[in-house]
Length: 190
Ligand SMILES: [Zn+2]
Ligand SMILES: [Zn+2]
Image: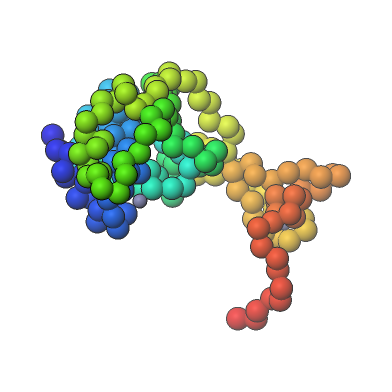
């Protein structure tokens, strides 16, 4: 059974510093595992295979969730819904159970206080709200090979996982249909 300091060390190495987000994120992820009946282990476990984490921000806590669970976005086990909240949900695909954990304590340590000691004095029930929630994966969100691959009729890019949209009888990617984060300037010949 790993100890608290092991997680702090791992978070420090992966995230680059120990911050409130690491401490809260480690505690949220440990609590999430326990709620789902999964044993916290320092190395990612085979029985975390069915674990999906929904992040509600892309800030420090996101790295802490990885440090505790080893669950990664590239394995389709991390979903980002950026509400700008220090909150995350833990879904077990095998049992269908899910819990959402959010931070309800708005007190933060001032610069003179020791960060680790500050949070160590607070119990989980003092800082977190836990909700049992229902989460249904949408078509194309499941781990595993893409269940659909389409071709955008405007840009020609391949669109996986039901992310294509139909506009006036055309199959388009979202970038072409809704506007994109980038502005294409010139095509570079390789
Ligand atoms: Zn941080
Ligand atoms: Zn397109």
